[in-house]
Length: 218
Image 1 (cartoon, helix red, strand yellow):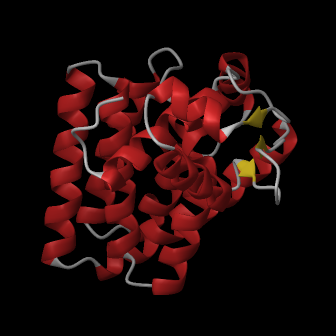
Image 2: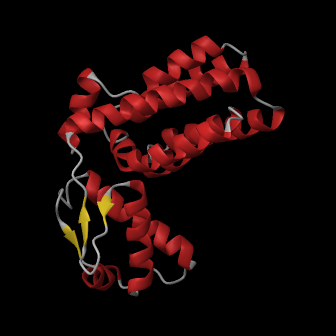
């Protein structure tokens, strides 16, 4: 891993790589993550590795054990489905509130993120789309102007980030996601809170065939 990046960006990038390995099953539930081995593999010191693992522990993807290696947390399919159900309700609430409370500044942030998602989708770049998708949803949270709701959304989103990233690798999901964003953006822009709420709930929730696709990719 390049040493030309800043320490914070380096640990963030390491977190993303380890996070995706957990989501894709490279590091299976219960697997131990040794700081020294990871530092050697990525050709960095143990400090950014430790910072990345701490971020993952905060998001609930791994468990840090005193005087022992980090261990990949075990999140079963049923638990994962429950978490997505809660995430869907929280984001639906954000959509409803954003439709009523969005400022011009909020609108510009949401529009900019939406356009960036379009560019990533057109390039068929799931990693870039994932990052822009994060910005789109963050802009939605901020537009709700409810600080407690924003914090709860951010916390749960961190725990689900690896699995939301993985969803984008399901066939046609990226294009479908962008089309859903377009509908959500229009609903919020015209101030239709009920529609925005419904669209966001359906956009986030994982059920039926979509959940089966996600599990198959895991």
